[in-house]
Length: 443
Image (cartoon, rainbow, N blue to C red; front, side, top):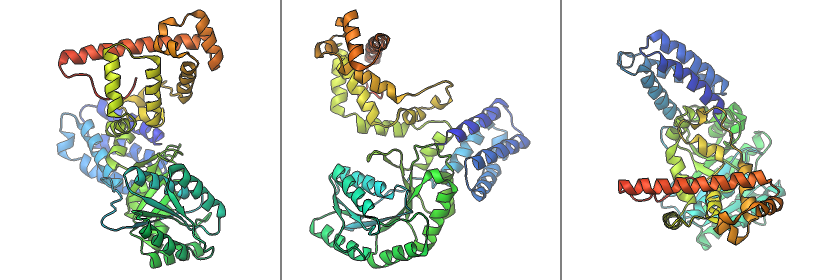
């Protein structure tokens, strides 16, 4: 996501920074390139026009042009305006005093609405709430079955009702069920269509009028670009949505929907889907997204992911093992698994400032799978003491893991270097009197 736009903007701003002092013509020329880059990223042309005008109005002032670092000042303005364009600050789902809190998810077929309903349920459950999923797509039994399967995977009750004709009746009974069973949140997965039609909108309008939801969220596919923006506009005009969830943000979408939808509809993007797994729903932070678009990384999100994946107890145990030089290949494998829980490696590297700009940087998730296979093919004794692994053992491990002896050699060398590096970091931190860092992001 945004890779093409990020590359273009980095090139534009690199030239600005290289100029030293700037003239108004330099800024104007750079903003023409920015405008073109945004249009190529499928950002709404009206949004692009307003954005460029705002940046230019601020960037050609004497305070910027006569500063010591005018190029950096222009980039700062662009970042601030990008942040404002996407909503300024994160807009969360606040349940308030209502119980049950009723959320209706709407959208067209294929946008990922049913899966997103389950992702939201997983999120609420992990926060200590008791959600209830409600299936109301009475025309598509497969959608109801899909929600039931997802509900079982995350241990959340799914209410489908017996009324096969009236989604309003299903919802009313579901709300009664929620009150009796003390469900804090009711998530209603509504019917979808392959496109917007009058029948769908009437059905959803009736549902809103009869059920009185506390929040209506539109689920839109980020890969569809401006179609997602047009979809959001239509749904908001007819229903009055409260927020948007963009799905498939991990794909190769150019980013136009994320940069346009808030400005066009006036409604915030609340969450983004960044993978198929049910824990891959993340809050949308405009400022962090603006930093990523400009190639500045997103360290805050990286830290949050690490804290979720790596418990304090495990971090302390790892510290003890490094101190005692008892860090083993089994521990190495555990750390790799923790990294995998944080999300796709390419996404994690994109959060580190400057990493996107490194040419030739290749990220292959299959390498982690290969490393796990090699370690799993070792005996418990070999995992505890890698120095035991001689030539014949290496051939056996390679045969058992479907790899080569060269792969085994490379793994053992990498592991030895990792142990050495961790020990050096331990000594360095100890000399500073700060103690060992409690949580390591990488082995």
